[in-house]
Amino acid sequence: MNCVSVWVAPSLCFSSTAFFFLIIMSTVIAPAAFDQTALESLCALDPPWVADRRRAAFERFQSLSLPDRSDENWMRTELRLFKRSAWGPSVQPGPEAVEHEGILARNTKSFSENFLSLEAELSEPMRLAGQIVTLNGHLRRSRCDQLVASRGVLFGTPEQVMAVAAESEIRPHWFNAIDSGADMFAAMHAAFHRGGAIVFIPDGVRLEQPLHLLSCLTEGGTDLGHVLVVLGKGAEATVITETAGGGPAGSGPGGLHCGGIELIVGENASLRMVNIQNWNTGVWHFARQKAKVHSGGKLQWTLAALGSRLSQVAQDVALVGVGAHAQVNGVMFTEGRQQLIYNTLQHHEAASCISDLLYKGALQDRSRLVWRGMIKVDKSAQKTNGYQRSDTLMLSEHARSDSIPGLEIEADDVRCTHGATSGRVDREQIFYAQCRGLSADEAARLVVAGFFQQVFDRITIAPVREALAEAISERIRRIQ
Image 1 (cartoon, one colour):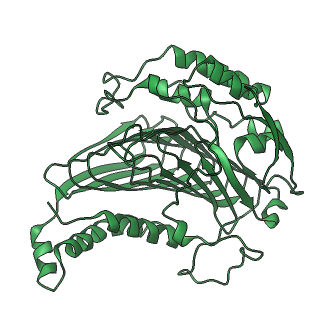
Image 2: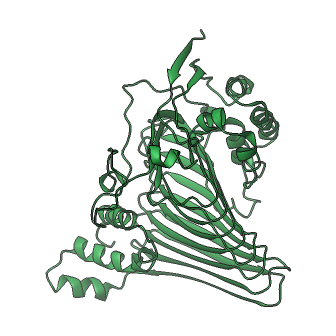
């Protein structure tokens, strides 16, 4: 039975005149599968051009099967236990559904009249310029400071922003960066995406405080949120995304996330982007993420991978303008039987660009971590400076790490270097720490903290750095 309700959206950053608006939403019970009926229920809520793109992606989705090991990016991914037919769009959770806290919950400050003030020291909770919380891809709450709204910033879920934004502001970038037909999961996301966020920062606008998106899952729920961040010329912003929830490993269907992130950094703009993946250990996590950095633009992209049952992520950076700069930081910690696979690409398309990638991962129990990185330099990208490095620390003799760096260079005036290391903890370091009164667990935490310090030093947002260090410390047990 179909039932239609009218609701008032929370305060959002849409234009110089922030206001409340009404949206008609269908609250029909979601179909049990990713099929034509589910597709049309979403298309009914979209602008026509978005619906057309959904239908094109659905045709591609229907023609694809699960990726197999003939694909280099998937050959180390264990998908035998993933059942495509077991998943479908989630219904909107009731008000009693539990929202999970992200790891930044203790490091962020609640909204107040003067939350944008800069009086607090770094040790104080982080103040936010805006926040969106979704559960199974459905909006739970959304807040944004009115001073930010008055500067023309757009911030809300895609459904909200598209209801009021000019089509010319969103359409050129929506599903333009990532390849929505690359594989079955990419096509599924492009056809059935719901939730996530759109951030649009006009030319010359600089935000001092971060915008924050928390995506939560119920046990057995699905999330197909899409995040689009667009910075105009000379703009500056910090955007933080977090994930939390889902079911634990071994408790039945933990959850499914199939998402996408697109980052557009305009000329001479500066973006600090943080993605914290902290799903529960029963969640299947698939994502395609890509940034385009234009002339003189700067991107600092920090990725943290702490949760999920299995993660398969493609993280690409395209330096498309002269003098663009990208720094990519990765922090990973695996335990139990977790399997994390990250494929990175630093694509130099223009001259005189710099890319710098540093991934660090620690593995516990019988977990597995795979990193496959590539620096690609086009023929026109002379004066390129590219660097990539991945270090892994084995905390158990049963853990496994695969690091595969690579270079593909067509230009002749470049400086590109890469490296990868993998090793176990030096037992003498543990013994040394224990001789000075530390327990075995405390000694392990000290050694691992030292291992991650190099990448922590590159994270310029103090509350994020502290929260990640604390989250990893809580997971570490004595060296096996």
